[in-house]
Image (cartoon, rainbow, N blue to C red; front, side, top):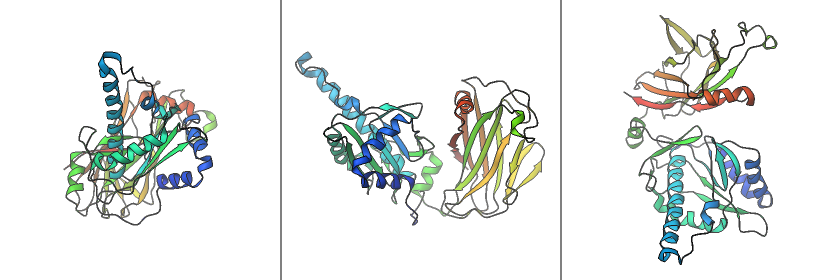
Length: 360
């Protein structure tokens, strides 16, 4: 959160953590299932492999013990950096769960990578906690989850949203981090300035779902252009993550894509389109209050299709958001051709928050 703290229902991260520790007999199986089911990393959940922590070390007799000492330090530094970064990111933006013991590939769980001694890792994280970020994060809960009769297992860390943000990572490049989408990012200067010098201002954050389809006759009359080409679809919602209500909101949407996104269903009870040449301008008919999420565009698409996007190509949207008595809010979201092509087979959209670019 940006400033202060409001009473709210338990987050998904908190509910997941409470359900997990409430049933110790099934906790290991649930966590193992996340790896088997290829669960995704998201706004509130991050996976880290842990097998390397307890792998055999080089012989202490070799090279006078230098290789052994260097490897121990490398592993400890890695744990400290990862712990410090995630404490900062989750405490600064909404809270979340860090799960040690799962290896990832492309932000999805790939396979189990258990800590050889899960309780020892949990104890180490607890010891490091107060020195990992400035100021320290309160309310952190760290639990080792092992299979019966074994020391190996997972370590689950619940990191609550903090009322005393921003928290700086003291080991991960001495940076302030925030959680956006499925990863951690450095906090932009403009947002960091607001966190240090609180003001009562709105901050409108777009969330975008993107996917590709090849329209067919079975899709109905809305898909009028059945040309066998790819069509990009976007659904956008707007969340007020600030601490003041946003009035007289106007959104200017800009696109850097190889296709013309000029079709889309607008929530007409909430928004009106303003005709201004070729610009996409939308005016909100309502006031958007703190923590409120409102739908914006539904299945926005392009009339002209295109060939399958190249893996290295990208689609970028830029949002310029204006509100009464508030600075201009500018944010961007980017999708690669490779991840969009996956949505055809997986039948799941790519979901991503637009990242703040600047504020004037």
